[in-house]
Picture 1: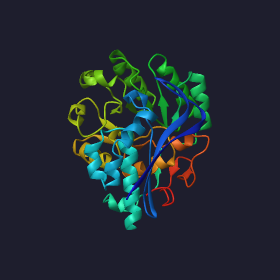
Picture 2: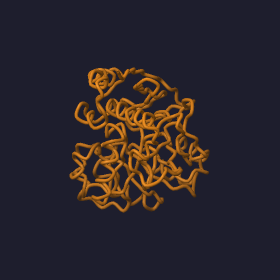
Picture 3: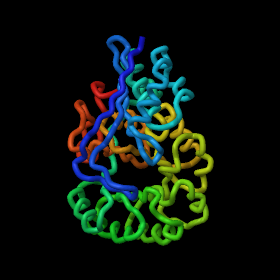
Length: 327
């Protein structure tokens, strides 16, 4: 019979990390272990308060389906047993890992990828701060090919201009985390285009993003908080040019792969992102990131220390995860 264990872990950050909704100094993750004799599958999720989640609520959700897991429920079954979100992500990814180990087949083959995963280049995130603080961080990371800047609204153009001066050769994307108002979108987009910004993530609150369908924006706009699963994808068409797919939103790799396919059919560019977590959370997302226009899987780079057998980052270049980690 399958054995289930659930553990909440805290991973200190290398520095305080701020976005428009607040500041954090640690990454709290929930890790699921599924053991079948000698085979062990692992999955990690990051409960997110923005979506009403906490480590306790996620743990309770997983415990609620413990009997079904012990009875043999697989990835297809848990799509109906758990809603999209962090709890399902940890379980789903643990099941993928367990299946790979049971059958001795790498997860990329189970996912029907056409070839083995190749290295990808991730964005490096610059935490929200004063223009001077963000410029200092950007200057220290000016060797990186891609940075993501956390923004909030008022004063954002000064922040981006300061970063651009500090890192003139680095490609930039920005993430407002729902912090703008509709009257900011057109002028900010025009100003950001002049600064060479390539993408704007989630400028408006998810429940007020319908206004995006009628505003001019020379910089493409990407859905993040507005995008979770294939359900609701249709309403993003016309509002957004791209979609940020995160496993903690889709509820695991199973739905994320399906959402990616559906988004490409709909003509949306693909970004693969993450919450701040360890390499265990990045490993399944690495499969999803193959061929994506933008990759933002820098969570481990923001930690004071990653877990054992973590993904190797050569600067901003992510190497494929090893079998000792996941998949």
